Image (cartoon, rainbow, N blue to C red):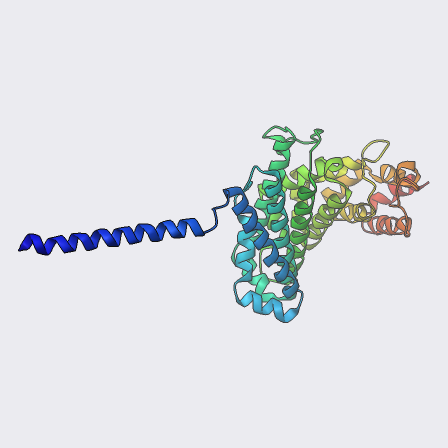
Length: 347
C-alpha cells in the first residue's frame, strides 16, 4: 500500500518538472537575445545623456532648480563626475562618458547660481574636491596619452606636447568654469575660500600643468584659468604668497618672457593678462617679482606682431588695445614701481 501511494506522488513531481522545463525553454526561445556588454553600456549611457539633457532644460527654470534640488539632484550630479576614471578603453564610449560628465558639471553650474540650497548641498558633499579630482584625472589621462612621464606635473616648464581630443577640451573647460563660479559664490558665504583650495597640492599642480603647456591646451582654456587665478587672489590676497612660492606665478609669467610673447591668439586671454598681473602684485613681494620680470615689453609686442593681426587672427579687434591699455593703467596706479617700466615699453 505504501508503495502504491508513493508512485502517484513521484509521477506528479516528474510532470511538474517537465512543465517547468518546457516553460523555461519557451521563455528562452521567445525573449530577445542578450546584447554584448559593450552595447548594454552604450545604451545605458545614451539613456543617462537623454535624462541629463532633460534635467538641464528643467534647471534653467528657477522653480525647476528648487524642485530638482529637493529631489536630490546635487548628490546625483556629483556622483556622475566623481566616478573613477577612465571608465572604458573604447574610444567612443570614453568620449560619451566625458560628454555626460560635462553635462553634469554644466547642470551643477546652473543650479549653484540659481539656488542657494544647491550651493550648500554641493559643499556638504565636498564637491570642490570632487571637481579638482576630476580635473586632475583628466590631466593625468592626457599626459599618459601623450607619453609624458608620471612626474611631469611637478616639473616646471614642461615642453612636451599634450595630445588633446575635443572631449578632453570640453570637460576641462566645464570643470574650470564651474570652479570659477563656485569660488565666486563662496565670497558671499561662510564656506572655505578659493585660496584654501588653491593651496592644496592637487589644484596647484593642475594650474601649473595648464599654464606650462599653453600651446597644447589653447588660449580659451588658459584665459579661463587666468580668470580663476585672478578672482581667487583678489578675494584672498593672502594666497598671493603661495602663488609665487609654488611656481604658479612663474608658470604664468613665462608666457611673457623673451622678445616674443608665448601667448595663443585669444582675445579672452589678452583681456585676462593685465588682471592677473595686478593680482600677482597685491603684495609687496609679489609686486617686486612682477617688476623684476618686466612683462610689459613682451606683452606689447602682441600689438605689432603679424601673427595676431588680420587676416591670420581677429583677436585684436573690438577695442582690444583700449581694454589691455586700461588694465595696464590700473596696474600702474596700484604699483608705482611699474610705471616707469610700462612707460618705457610703450615708448
